[in-house]
Image (cartoon, rainbow, N blue to C red; front, side, top):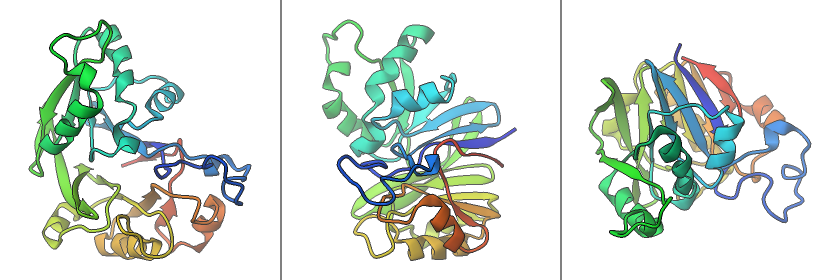
Length: 254
C-alpha cells in the first residue's frame, strides 16, 4: 500500500503563530493546529521523510517513530531543515550515519548550519549524516525510482518529488513548463499556498488552484498554509471539487 501522511502542513511560523489571536490561531479545531510542513511517504516498500523542520522530533513521535530509509530535502530553509540534529536518535538506534538526499547547494547550507556534525574532530553524540547528492534527474533509493521536480522559490531553485502516482511540491511559486511532463497522470498532487493574494515566493491560493487544475490529478491537496487563509473547514468549503486543504495527520493512499 502506497500512502502519504502529512506530518506538518503549516507555513514557517506554524499555526498558531506565537502571540497571534486571529480566528485561525485561536481556533479549537485540531485541523487548524499546523506544525511546519513535512510528509512521510510510504512507497513500494520505502519509508521516506520529506523535509525535517524544527518540529521533526514531535512529528516523528506523533507518527509512532517509523523507521526511515532516508530524508529528502526540498531546499535549505530552516523550516525544512532545522530539526536535523535529532537524527542523532536514529544514529544511535540504527548504528549508522543517516541518509540525507539533497542538492549540492543544500549540503553547503547544512555544513554551515550543523557545522559540528561535519567537523574533523566531532563532539561525541553529534549527528551523523550520510549526504547523498541529487539533482533534478531521477534517482533510486533501494532500487525504487523517485523523480525530482524542479521549481523556483522566488530566486531559489528547489525540488519537489514524484513517487509513482503522487507528487509533492512545497515552497514554490513557479514550475518551469518543461517539468510538467513529470506531473502527468497523477492520482495525488500536493502543492503549497500561504494566502489569497500574491506572495513573493509561494503560490497564491488562486495560483495553487489553477496549478491543480492544470496538473489534473485525481485529488489535490494544499499544504504550507498560514493563518492568513481561512480556518480549515471554511477553506475546504470554498475550494473546487477535487482540491482540499491538507491537515496534520491526514493520510492519503495512492
